[in-house]
Figure 1: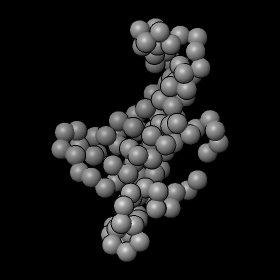
Figure 2: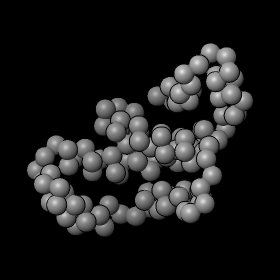
Figure 3: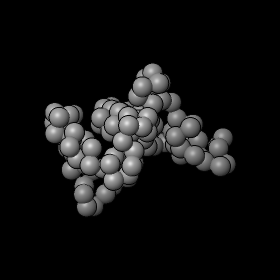
Figure 4: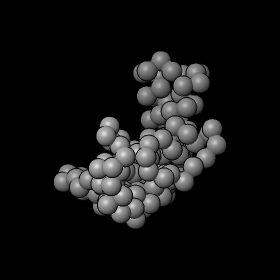
Length: 116
């Protein structure tokens, strides 16, 4: 990922880790994954007016931060889908070994391999 997708990639990685490692009741993990997939399928034109209204209420119209939020919003589903599958394939024993041996201040994400 270049500089363009980093906000969405960072937030998407955290969401993917949560989807892969934790079980949610309402909404379920499957429902959340379906929601992220539906964001890739829906045309971005559907979000123009709601996004404009949100940015106007936050007084962020004509600002760089509005563009950053817009780009992060539309690039978020892709890393969630890809990274959640990667985190599901990582054995849980790898995290347990990192917690037990090398990382007394265990933070799971910085110690695990990521594709970027």
